[in-house]
Amino acid sequence: MTSFDRRDLGLLLLRAGTGGVLAAHGAQKLFGWFGGHGLEGTGQWMESIGYTPGRASAAMAGAAETGGGLLLALGLATPAAGAAAAGAMAGAAAVHAPQGFFAQSGGYEYAASLGLTAAGLAVTGPGRLSLDHLLGHALNKGWMVPAVFAAVGAATACVVGSRNRRVGRQQDESVQEPLFEE
Image 1: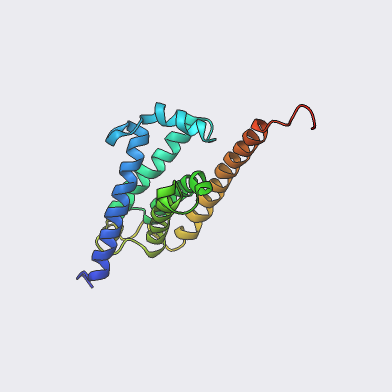
Image 2: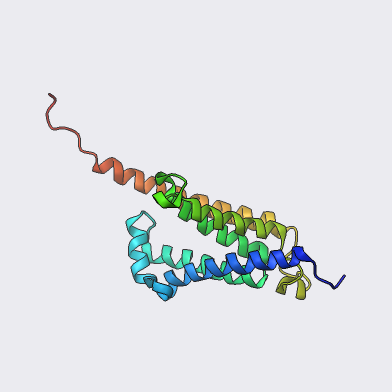
């Protein structure tokens, strides 16, 4: 069947919107575009929130967001693109989790929404209005979905776990015990 239906159009809209937002967000980190701070400024911020080394963390997060977002928008290598973007958003959600769910309080609502949408697109596939479809789904095979989610999930768990342990140690060190008991 060569005609497109509304599901294909819906997937295109989801891919283009989510992918565009992710790519722009990553470009802020990588290049300082759209009011971002580039690798240097983002690296310093990443270091301050426990992702070390900061510059490398900024580069990896920026690459996952920019690359994953662009590939999602194009519908190319959709499983890997969605998994990479979802992993980056899981790392962002970990930073915002202590503030609760809602974004107005600094919570993880926005990162979770982007990550879940990217993951959903990776699982669902890009639809027929995509480069994956045009290329015969050479980079969008069914076996790729669990493989990339396993790899990205393991890497994300290691990075976020390491960050959480580092932040926990810093918090423990900043708590001062009274010098004398009263």
